[in-house]
Every structure is written in structure tokens, then in C-alpha cells.
Image (cartoon, helix red, strand yellow):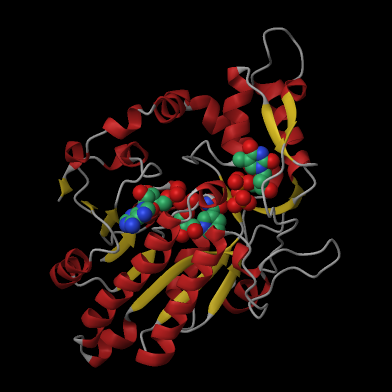
Length: 354
Ligand code: NAD
Ligand code: TYD
């Protein structure tokens, strides 16, 4: 079996759902259920014996050590993190605690477990750490996209804490020999995305008749990766990645924020027009820029394609249309998140282990 951390969050829950749809191998899902963890994302797994949810913190050494001893996973995929840049600006402490201290304690539990395995299991074991392109800093307009050899130049408390965790993961490979893999991906989008991030926030606000906030001039560029493509890339790296290596994962979809918002408005105009017949673009509002806002991220995903034969299946145009449709079809999920009702979703409904 495998252990997934942060599997009740946006990417983690997509990964667990995809994994169990594609393979028989069971998943232990360890998640602290912070504001970003939502067990409703996993409602379709209720009663599925191949999914065991454990409510807990990656920084709880005793808990993680006990889980590893009990379940003997062959691999760990570490999604658990504080993930929102704006929150890291308002309160960096949780980011240091989970992303740095939490990853360190998780690695310590893994080191103790892995050291006790026999030679064959040691060699087969994998610790896959999910990181971000934001660790590389900000690109100029004409700079080449980030490759795996770019220096780390993180600019926000979020990216600095992720960079620190990447360094710890790297050190546990070089110092102790643990077979680790690190992936650095671009901005994900798709189902179950918490509506504090740009794409789900704009869809939600548009439908609610609220302003669509554009930070600064809206010309900041991000690369967009459909979450299910990200999940397939992680599966591929887990299967074929070389221990100690890092792999950049991107969608080959660089877009200025304003273009993304215009695209969302156009699709919504077609799929769910405003009752007054006016275009959703009317709701766009320019607001004060984010402090230290990185201007451009772009990913060169050539290594994973050359070495592991992976490339994204979705273009931005196909992925964004599916995403808007998903939000239109799942408005109850969105309103449970925005009202806070999702916090009451009790894990024991489908077999939480404390
Ligand atoms: P998310 O915020 O939606 O989910 C994070 C999950 O981790 C939540 O379920 C939360 O409850 C859990 N968690 C937080 N602290 C924990 C702790 N101490 N112990 C156990 N669980 C804890 O994040 P996401 O967008 O799904 O991102 C997943 C990973 O991918 C993160 O490591 C993030 O840095 C990385 N990443 C995300 C993006 C993106 O676009 N969303 C891009 C690049 C990298
Ligand atoms: P976000 O989804 O927070 O991801 P990240 O900061 O990790 O890239 O933001 C994506 C881009 O959209 C980023 O440049 C900030 C911008 N943005 C807005 O312009 N308005 C918003 O309301 C939000 C949430 C983000």
C-alpha cells in the first residue's frame, strides 16, 4: 500500500480518487483537516476498504511512526502543506510549522522506518515530495522557463517554506540514502479547488454577482496544469523516476492572469449567462497588488517527457472548460465550502481512524 499525506486537500484528494480508480493498491490517507482539508471531496470512497483515512499531523512523529510500522507502505506521497501565498503573507507561522517542521518530522519517522527494512524493500521504497515552481523565484518576460537546475530564489513565506522542505528531502537522500523523488509543478486547476485561489474564486464570485478581483495590472504570468494531468505525472514519477532526482511538471500553458479571467468570463457567458444579459467581464475589479508579487512563472517540463514519457493530456482550453462545467455541476460543494458547512463533515461517516 501507499501512504498519502494531505489527501483531503485539492490535489491530494484528486490524486487519491484517481489512484483508487486506476489501481487495486490501498491508500492510507493522513490529513490534519486544516481549513483546506475537506472530506467531502472523498465522499465517493465511503465504505471503500482500500481507503483508510487517518486524522492527524505529519509533524506528529509518534503517530506517523506507528502508521508506518502498522501498514508498511512501499511509498509515501507527501502533499500535506500550507499552500496559499496570500495566507503566508498574513501569517507565515503555520507555513514554517507544517512545511518545514512537519516535513522534517515526517522525514525522521520515514528514516526510522526505512532503516529497519530489508535490502530489497529499502531499494524499492520511495518518498515522493510534492513541491512547487515558486521555489525558483520570479522570471523576467524573456527568460527561459524554469528547469530543474535553476537556483532556488523563493520570494514569499510560502515558497521559502517549500524551498526549505525540498532541501531537507534532498539532504535525507544524500545523507541517509533514502530513495526520494521531488516534483516541482506549476499552478494546478480543476475539481475540488478551494475558492480562495484565482480560478475557483473567479468562478464563484462571477456566479454570485460579486467583484472579480485582479491584483495590480493583471499581467502576472502563471503556467496552468490541469490537476488530473498532475496526478498522472506523479504516478509516472513514482513508478519510473530516478531516486534523488527532481522533475518539473507543467502544462505548457503560460497565461497572464487577466487572460485567464477573461477566458473564465467568456465560458460562463456561454454556459450560464447572467440574467441581465450583461457579460461577466463587467464584474472585473482592479485591487491593490499582492506584496512581493512574483511576475512570472514558467515550467520547462522537458525532462519528465524525455525520461519518463509524460506530457499533459489537456490543453488550457479543454481543461478550463471542464473545470467551469464541474463548478456549475457541483454548486452544493462550493456552497458547503464557502458557508463553512464542510467543516462539519465527519470522517467517521466512512471509517476515520483516530
Ligand atoms: P491544499 O491547501 O488544498 O491542501 C493541503 C492539505 O494538507 C489539506 O487537506 C490540509 O488539511 C492538509 N494539511 C495541512 N497541514 C497538514 C499537516 N500538518 N499534517 C497533515 N495534513 C496537513 O493544497 P493543494 O493545492 O492540494 O497542494 C498540495 C501540495 O501541492 C502542497 O504541497 C503544495 O505546496 C503543492 N503545490 C500546489 C500547487 C497548486 O496549484 N495548488 C502548485 C504547486 C505545488
Ligand atoms: P493563486 O491562485 O493565489 O496562486 P499563486 O499565488 O500560488 O500563483 O494566484 C494566481 C495568480 O492570480 C497570482 O498571480 C495572484 C493572482 N490573483 C488575483 O489577481 N486575484 C485574486 O483574487 C487571487 C486569489 C489571485
